Amino acid sequence: MSYISYLCYQNLFRTLNNLKIYYTKDYNHHSMKKKEHLNAILNEVEAKFGRGDSAGWKNRDFEDLNFEINKNTKTIISALTLKRIFGKIKTTDDYLPQKATLKALEKYVDFVQKKQAPLSEIINVDYISNPHLETEKTYKQPKKKTRLLILITGILCILVSACYYLFSTQKITTQNAEWGQIRLMKSDGINPKTVFFEYSTPNNTDSFHINFDENYHPIYIPNGKNKKTTYFFQYPGLYKVRMQKKNKVFSDSILVYVPTKGWQALGYYFDQKYSERYFPINIENCTRNGNFHPTKKDLNNSGMDTAKITVIRFDNFHETGVSGDTFTLETTLKNPDKWSGIRCNSIYLYVEGRKGTIRFRFANPGCSYWIDYRLSEKEIINQNEDLSNFTFSLSDWKKFRIENQNKHVNLFINNISRFSNTYQKSIGEIIGITVLFHGNGYLEDYKLTDAHGSTVFKFKK
Image 1 (cartoon, rainbow, N blue to C red):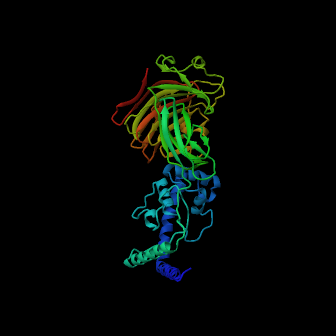
Image 2 (image 1 turned 30 degrees about the horizontal axis):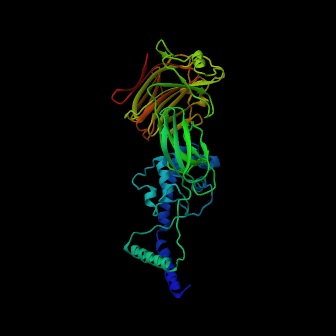
């Protein structure tokens, strides 16, 4: 190393040492405040995730939390990092996560700290330009925004720049080697719909898949740049297409919308594979005395094997321009007394929004173990709370009414209140509705109205 180089680095290290002494003064006070804020966020994360005290979480719990945070915030916080944050992995006493990680946690729980700025605004670190690439390190000690600090920082930057310019022998570049791309090239048809994609996988040798929806089977893709693939969408909905490895997302999402032409009915088999058929059902032929009900003969005529467990979905998908956060849904439904192979036959009601879903499942008495519901960001399953209010005899006609008033949802069965709860994140514009039967259910009427009482969807005898 030349004498000039030696002097340059000597001054640089001297400046860094002075900065370290300068920063140490109020470190303990600031660190304590940051820890208090972090603990407040983590308490809310525990409460929302709903799996009890994090001290008892297993590896699978942290992987599931990683998936939930990514799904809600589009930011990846690895299971390893989450273990570090929640104290399952030993760290230094002054350890704090990065700002992007904190912002993701705050967004996940809609964290608001009264009388104080959010923790991610208080901690003084550089923001990660790409929130999907996430690394961890111990925080620098807090800086005082004084003129002296600005002067010292300026001198430090000049020294670093001069040393880099004089003595660098190679150019160092960083790139997002872990981020892939998906593009929608074209689509064929409306419903069903075939969509053509072009993709580029990240620069590594891992195996990736493209994920479409919780009900659609993912496809595994070979690595490469500008590769082509297609997918066949058999039933209506709004689908988020993204590249993943296990539960970790590696690309931005593309939305694919599959509408209907008015009301549409499809039949398929319970737990069938993606490649198996969906059978169109003629609604007019299956509507008798004003009630939609495909008999076993109707299903046989459609090509279905009624010895298997049959599922019927009744859909209407189109853009409405109506907010999904205020509406009233009224429908009269029932299921058949028996269907071979089914004891806990169910009825589902879906209201699909551009940004989220409201979904209820109902079943026969004794089957509350299988019940779940979703209100936008809230998904509740039987392990979290008693859902026996969603079980009753489905072989008799029931009048279902869902009232959503500014994200406050009330459910009535035969005019008796069965459920009330709220959610925070808007589901956006209503883009479709679904009634789903395990078995060949009956539908007498269906009506969904907006905040002003105007009809959005209607099926009436």
